[in-house]
Image 1 (cartoon, rainbow, N blue to C red):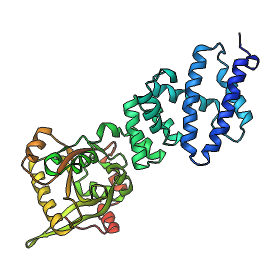
Image 2 (spheres, helix red, strand yellow; image 1 turned 90 degrees about the vertical axis):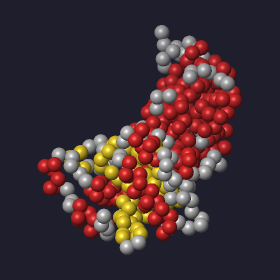
Image 3 (cartoon, helix red, strand yellow; image 1 turned 30 degrees about the vertical axis):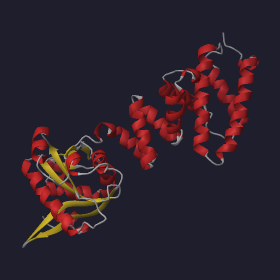
Image 4 (cartoon, rainbow, N blue to C red; image 1 turned 60 degrees about the vertical axis):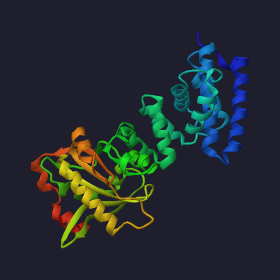
Length: 354
């Protein structure tokens, strides 16, 4: 039998209390729109869980609540039945279903709620919809807070598995950089890098990969992570009577250093580390100022053997990290004729020579 909520004094009293708190939250929201509203959502989610657990209001509870709140606050869009379900899901995700009174106050009600209520509601929905556990979710919450990701960027980071890739590259940063720069440098690297925004033929070469990344430099910078500023490609470095060219040069605003990125379309080889060490010395000599930290090198290879990398980096004094990259799509060779020629791309970009 369907329960008549409008005849329930308990429901009417609770509804009146919710309306009063919404009006109070609206006043506070003039100053802090997101935080006050989301704190109210958190409390409402807890109460919805408690009411559905302990009352006899039946399956029509959320539709009726949505109808009553929408009638009282017609200008607010947050009380649709679907959003009320998200509010309940959001609360359950982080609280593990415990009512407010049963939560460990110092761990959840203060610290966790403070974090999740400081980011936009749409971001919260994306996180709980796509993350499997609280630790993963909080990784992305911190990312939004630190880097001010838009919702589309957040979704991209989640779907590309950033939490599994961040800080996973093999490097010698711990012994070549002082703390806390070494810790920050470690977290800066990913392994693997996902170049899913590229469409390459199966037999692409390093210069083609480099050109494609520069052509899509916005997506490339997004994949590299926050703090990278693009300086140039095929940057010339003169040593003695010879001239060398590094693939890509960046400046990292948080590490306060230049970053050399070398691309290898084959497996990592020990000589790659030696050549990168040479490049880092040359960049330090030519570009580094007294205000800059030591230049960092990132070797991005098709694949690597961790033990080989560790051996190759063990006696090198310059900071180098080694990661792999992945392409999620490759065009058959027969389609290559329909793509722009690499020389055309280089001419448009003003590219140099190797």
